[in-house]
Image 1 (cartoon, helix red, strand yellow):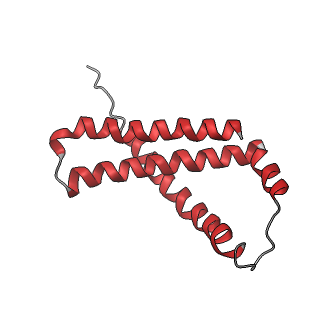
Image 2 (cartoon, one colour):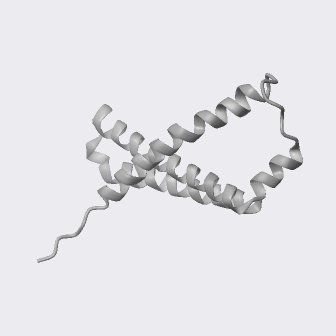
Image 3 (cartoon, rainbow, N blue to C red):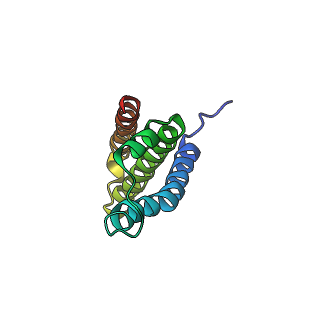
Length: 117
């Protein structure tokens, strides 16, 4: 008798991967583009240099991975906030579909934007 496997381990993997990626990369990007460049602590890269950097396939892959993992991290955290914090367990299927659907849609948008960049 085979039991249907739960997707829960994959969801927790995306949650933890997204949290780790966001914790490591987002503060660096915020520091560089929010403080260091505007305040003149580091020389500001010119537009052509940043465009060449963003157009590189490896950079696109890293930005896409960061976006996808951060979105799924948000979806999982928000889902359990609604379940446990607001006690909305009665609508568990709807909440899961909306949260992970929004993360998947955001991933498609991020991929489209990066492919067109």
